[in-house]
Image (cartoon, rainbow, N blue to C red; front, side):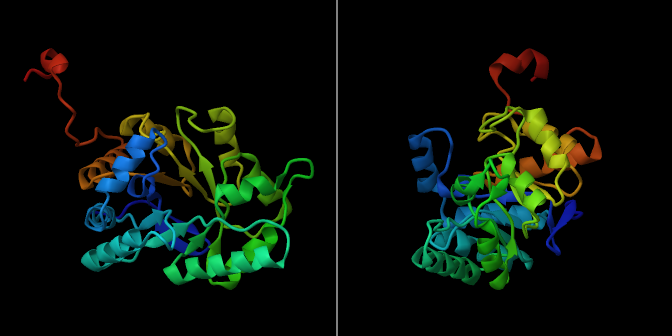
Length: 281
């Protein structure tokens, strides 16, 4: 099968579709019971099987995960060995953003862990980036220090944020970032301002944008969410989508390919009794 459309972030080539890890690690954005269920069923073998599907379809980027998620790291290695292709790891570490040398030392040790884990693109998590946003002075306080530390460890720096402000301030102040995270979906789920405003800000950015939650954490069907994302993003931007099974991975990949090729997806629809007269079966 042909390779998936690609982009370049900080000189590194990667697929424009990335495998998300919330559905691997138990972050459902639905209920605690749902999150618990995800953790119970997501074994190393199951995750490796899903990532193998992505890799065999030319999708070689994984977003998320931390040094403590050993089953995920092991699953990534398993998938790479099965397919003979490397994965680009995009990780979002929590930094110690308090003032003082002790906090800076803790951040340095944390970044060392992510570098040893094999992180290629390192984007401080929203819980580190967003508290540092200074809207009054249109800057992200001290972020230049952390980005330099990321560069020094051989990782490509970016920003993970849940606000539309952070990428703007990064561009305005010339922060050393190669990409930014933005929540972006047709439902406006977890977005702080209207969808059309976020859309405009993405198109105004100097670097590729890595979008997350295109299916609004399961609130949109894949065709709905992916059609919106692929139709409204730039050719350099990335869509991150999470799946819970190899079959789901096959579906989102096929739907994405169909949207790029302007054809109907070759996926089997979910049949129910209420559709018998339409389906004719």
